[in-house]
Image 1 (cartoon, one colour):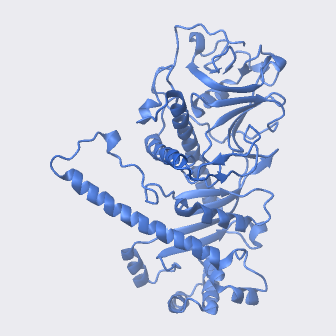
Image 2 (tube, helix red, strand yellow):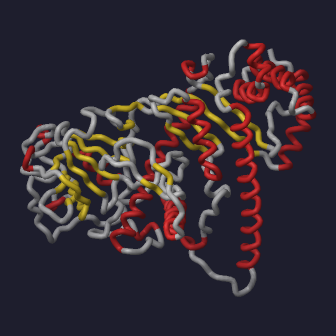
Image 3 (spheres, one colour):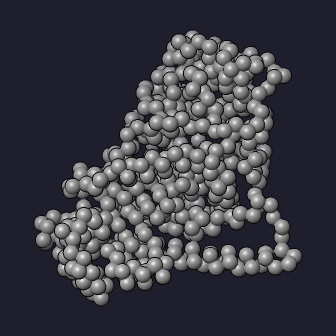
Length: 486
């Protein structure tokens, strides 16, 4: 049973004697008895050799031990200082614009761009993906936190994805290893917590720190209850897909038109300028954040800042990628060195699969119909997106069509669903109705398409929920008769 008096006494003791490892160990045992494993883990890390001596084994988080923890804590402190400075700046700017003669801005322009390290850009939840072959999963997760620097989220989830042929399956079963959370308190909250005898363990920068283990194979322990953390992970995944789509659309818009979009509506225009197929709740906020980060990356590239090597794996081209030091897409906290790559489509003729990929992650995978040697291999891009080609949603080309590089080849629906998985087309890529409609919403105009042999796994789990945008514009083209090589 928890002894509040013992916990309060021990907290005061370690606060006055932060180097006393026995005090940290005893406090950790009290938290463990109280069922507060996250706070207990933090104390056991501080206890160091004392923990090893009394438990006859090293703590599972001791791979990098206190040095790495303190480094991360220091960066969290710097982040907190940056937020406070930014808030002061925002207040001062507000005073300036409230004076007579200040600028009159519309709603789209009135939102300030994100400031690095402020509450506007620090993600509440982020994820580090640990490779299946990694022998030091906890150490790998800590390295990811340290390397994230100012972009580290307030809560980091370390997880493993299913892997096959060098690809990681986004829609497969994820295995969550651990979570690290920094609960940031303002000065008034710290004073109140002290007065109430809070059970939180705080670092020298006023953060409450918790480490929670969810995988018994990793920690050799009884894992914490995990339903809550898996819900947080799934919610993060949903938001991340929106970040990928919007970030990819902004990137392709710049390539197509030579300049950045000034507002989200620039991406959601009628045919033939329909870069995106519609909108979704939260999209305007995501657009502003992604646009600012993409511009920051462009500035970094022009200034000659060195990129970091992407993690190994296939990306459709079979090559590793150099990415800029400023990570831009995946601003939802997806903590990977190759998170700045826009979405791509890979078609595997051998397995009759079409996949939407980001780096070496398969975001979606669909069974498709092809034309054997009549379907050309090579690199293409989506040069046109059209709804209800030839005026019908159930005709030869189904309800959606995406032309490949201004040719007679296209990705489209079909009125012959039994041909999916076979080589019966004249060269085009046939898809089921629900699949082609999701693909149409997920990838923007300009998306690269790579057609090759023997690239993708032969099977993939479907997503729990379809990605869908709400249409806002007319994407039909009634003046053209489509003659794709069906």
